[in-house]
Amino acid sequence: MKQVLIETQYFTAEPLKLVEGTTPTGNPLVKGILATCEVKNGNGRYYSKELWEREIDKYMESVNANRALGELDHPDSSIINLKNVSHNIKKIFWEQDNVMGIIEILPTPSGNILSALFANKIPVGVSSRGMGSLKQMGELMEVQDDFELLCWDFVSTPSNPGSYMKEVGIMNESKTNQHNKYIKTNSIITEILCANGTCPIY
Image (cartoon, rainbow, N blue to C red; front, side, top):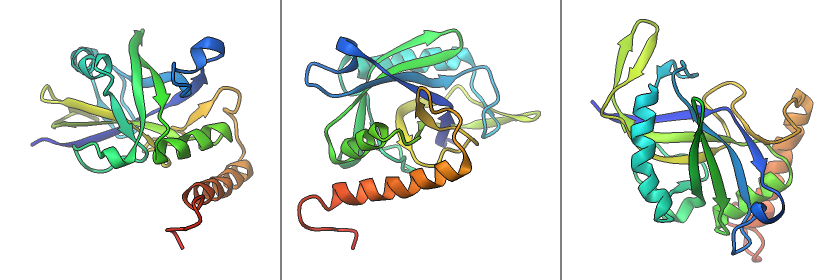
């Protein structure tokens, strides 16, 4: 039976510089790994390269139509909630067994939060969201041929240990620094939500 499958991939965001660093509208772009195939992931699941190639080919229709949207924090749903959209994938390509992406951060409420996190070098994760069934194959749960890729979301708590999306140069953070960054994250989000004189979180 099909179920929602959420996988978090180790992702180092590489901010694009100079002319390549923004879209014509001035929105920021980041580049990094979206998925890796032919390996056992942190959820004990295995995706074949053939399966990912098929789904990427299908997903390119959304990319080419400028509607490869994703959310900030992933719901356990097959529906993309437009009220929570934070980004749009502009380009997908392969580097060996890695699915690479160039992602535009949108000026939506969720996108503004995401931009603030990046601007303050706060690590976030990235997760694929799809529908599919699993089959136990020894120590692996193999994702079956009925898998359908839905989108990629940015997340605060990845399913894999250490699976955080970070800017280049901040790969090795101490536990103390991580704690301070989480405190700073809460402050940034509160400032954005309460910027119009009303504060819905109090």
